[in-house]
Image (cartoon, rainbow over all chains, first blue to last red):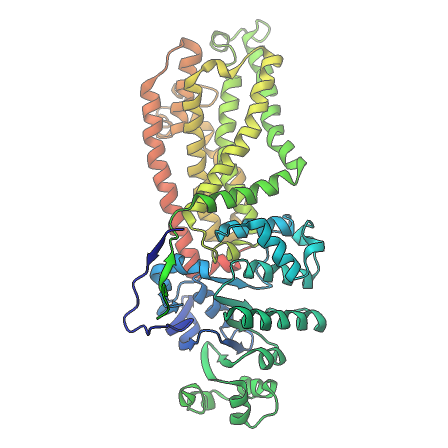
Length: 274
Length: 279
């Protein structure tokens, strides 16, 4: 494969963070002519090799943020750099190095698992496609389902297939939107263990949006708390527990979700934590 | 900085990614024999119907239409070529709709796939689907009516190419409309091309149309193709002027189709439609 050099962003350190977002904003027009701000000038960095949780209630802006990081959604304002590459200008250069999984974006139902993985393996330019598909099928316990249509699988099986697709290219950056949503505890635990091992083995960076606080406490080195399109707090799970004087991240989540806007906007939060 | 920290794999137009998308649609097609059968069913039925109409109109009991009688199989040729245009457009639109029905656009466009590669794959599948649909019908016309459209010779390839390219342009326009308006616009995939049928002069010459409508017809590549086809069938002459007009207009239509598609794709990224659009 030929290679080219993407111009380094001014001020980019020798090893850029996996993700750097600055002033990231998304406004959607409404039928009555006003704009709704889904994400409001957020900024954050995700260091390489870390697992970062993106938390927030429904409508907090998590999926919108992930969509902008992936380049599926164009920001109204702000910049995104992935692995040191400006997504607005060189998105296609960095896409082979990242991947994404979400239970809300499905793979074609009528294709078998093998066919789906084969198509995506070719899209990511993999060599030895058959071997890679077989390898992932064994790792993710999919061998029995390889020749079954993807649409006929259970939720847990579909999640594993989606994860297999997301891992096809051994991504340096993995973005996961609710990776264990609607899974039974056993399957969810299996997925979390797999992600832990994957990160240890490859040193990959993971950004995951989740509503499951136990999952976040277990997997994440740091957490970004979102509310109404803004990052209202951030830090390591242990630091957040200490700051809010709580025993669990779920209690911290509820504190933030139910806090008055005054509290959020007056400083006990993200900017102060910075 | 580690070596090659910012050395990125080149991600320009890739035939392999085009092939991957063709494979995706081929998997879908081969997995369902009713779909393959359906591709050939309508062109065959249309050919048989129009073939008998052709025979009847050319016979004395049918009034002995001199116009039809002059050119053996003129209506059969017309219906087969019309199906090239229809199948060409449908081939692009249906393959695109497959992604919408399966809510797969989000996965596709976080992969290195580029819009241009996807469009090339849609066109390739359109060609494949058109050939699967039209070739059996053209072959069956020989035993049914003793007429082979292949006797048109090389010009047939030019007619075919012009009609399928027009079909692709229309297909891209429909894709753009669905990207803009969502699945509510899905029905356009089946009806838009028929708006062109009356002014494409498929079964009658452009001169039949009222004077005010003739410039509209002549602004369509399809009208030039069908006029050219009739000149070949009736007089045995290849009308280069019609062919040149068809090619020129097709360049304009295709440029327009691509521009509208790219604009709609960009707007879909602005609105977040790539992640949300589906059934």
